[in-house]
Image 1 (cartoon, helix red, strand yellow):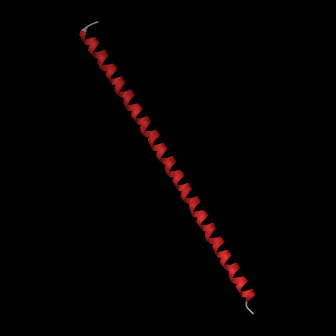
Image 2 (tube, rainbow, N blue to C red):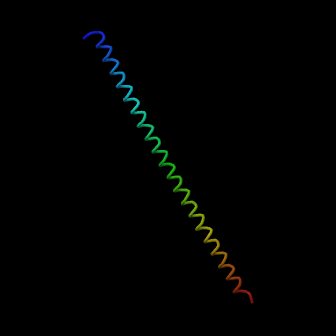
Image 3 (cartoon, rainbow, N blue to C red):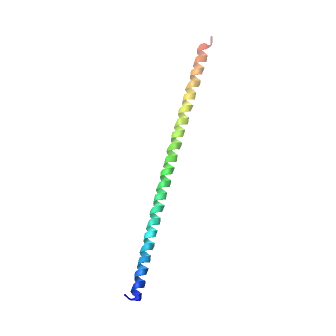
Length: 77
């Protein structure tokens, strides 16, 4: 094999390696983006659950207040 052929082969191998590295980097970036999206979704779900819990607590407090008012009304002469 001549020197030129060897150089061409080396160049081709280097190009292939670079392409593989780029593909790997792209895959890693995609995975990171997916993970971030999943985390954001989980956070949103948690926030929604927290809001629902707060609303339920508020409703319970209101009902309790109404009951107390009713009880007080009944106890008045």
